Image (cartoon, rainbow, N blue to C red; front, side, top):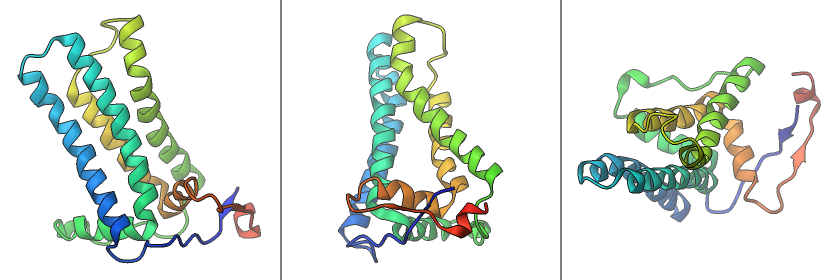
Length: 180
């Protein structure tokens, strides 16, 4: 198994511009999803609504990956602490210890299936119209599963995704990860 060295990009600590931009992108992603039922209530043509819905969900996934890259692990932990502070029962639900192989596999499925499905939706609708229900509830559930996949994958996954956007980042294979 491959591990990442410690990645400490500039501007990650505290609530700097990266954190604020990440939060703004996260809010934008949520607002875009919430706009779909509003657009449906306005009586748009089904084909137009389907096209907008497909575009919104693809854009939503891209925005979420950008949020991860911007805020990093420290920013995500801070965001999680802010959100959890509003729900006292959720305190202490963070991962304990390293992520095992089963949890990692489940997290990858939770990450890739909704992402792949949202990319394929417009093509499925075009080539096989009516094959899938075009219900916003299912699409919202897919987004929630996608986001939950990050929690299941654990904090090291955030560092790995963030490393995709750091030109000088490199993979470090360590003996402790090789035994996993």
